[in-house]
Image 1 (spheres, rainbow, N blue to C red):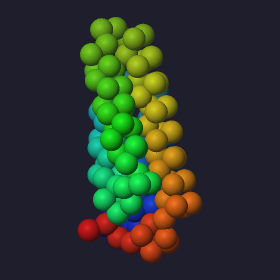
Image 2 (spheres, helix red, strand yellow):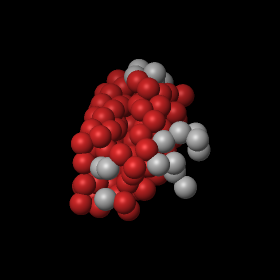
Image 3 (tube, rainbow, N blue to C red):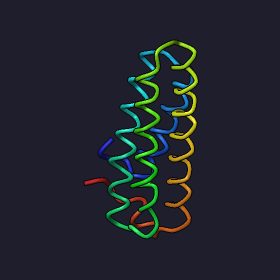
Image 4 (cartoon, one colour):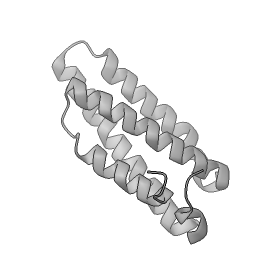
Length: 116
């Protein structure tokens, strides 16, 4: 992924998230990994443009972690599936918002530069 732009990385992460829509223990592990990858990219953008990304990088990530924890701590399959859907929905929404912010609020040179 090092050769791709940050924006392309986010689009790839979003496509991967879309592929694990239904709950299973394996999908949950994948979703957590994808959320961590998203967080690393979001953290970079927050360092570049905190006025644009600060809310997502703080409150948004806390909400994602809480949703992940709720899924992990659920006691039965129905509850796990419900929490997972909420987690999945929020992660896809967060990634889409981040992509929109990048396209609308950042100079192209920042959005397309390679991650360090």
